[in-house]
Amino acid sequence: MSSVEHYENFPVASILMPRRLRKPVAAIYHFARAADDIADEGDLSDGERLQRLDDFHHELAHIANGETPLSPLFLRLKAEIEAHQLPLQPFHDLLDAFSQDVVKKRYADYGDLLDYCRRSANPVGRLLLHLYDKASEVNLRYSDAICTALQLINFWQDVAKDWTIGRVYLPQEDLARFGVSETQIAAARTDDNWRALMQFEVDRARALMLEGKPLGSILSGRIGLEMRMIIQGGLRILDKLEAADHDMFRRRPVLQPFDWVIMLAKSAPF
Image 1: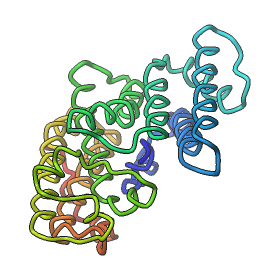
Image 2: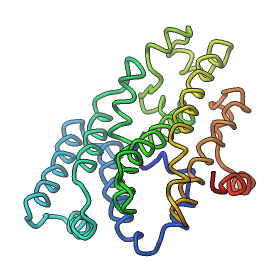
Image 3: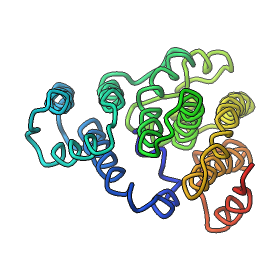
Image 4: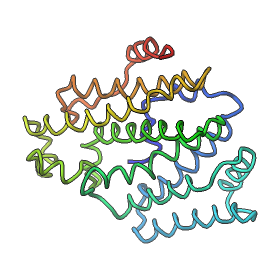
């Protein structure tokens, strides 16, 4: 599941985004969307997918060396990177995560999964903090916690969807610990073992989100409100997972209009 898809529940971001940042954010999104499509869409072989993602690394190298990129996508990205002095490492990290999605379909343990999230999710938040001119060490740490939590929440929403494309993001160590097999995922069977496993994963994601929650009060104005809405949206999805008794196979949780009312009410400065 891509770094961009874990924002699917938070369209408020585009509404609250300051006008001056919409162009660079769009450039970052289009970069991530294009790379994600290479990793997941169409009928390319794994080798072709990896080669095209490697071509993206080369385009970033052109930018780093002050050279002209070859594609319009990277010409636009170069302009925003230079205008806002954005670091290039987050872009490389995203490409590494997309390349990993091509070849890696299982995760041994939670640490293995967190390492993936570090590259698939956290770069987006880090780039946004650089755009906001708020990329302090403390803020980056809070942002990493929020972005990783969002990625995990998306994984738990989409267990069934990911299974159809051959991916299992639930750590193999956790499946074994709670006595859940991949055959059970394939059968979309929920039982006490499944519910115990998913409650364990939901609790970890919620703890991470709450760890990053102070960022919502550190950031001010529309940016702060956007962050608080994102945090509340993630927490709301976790609540819905629990309310569905962790049966995301039949009741995949999504945000409804009334949820936005609740999220807004809870998004007053902490």
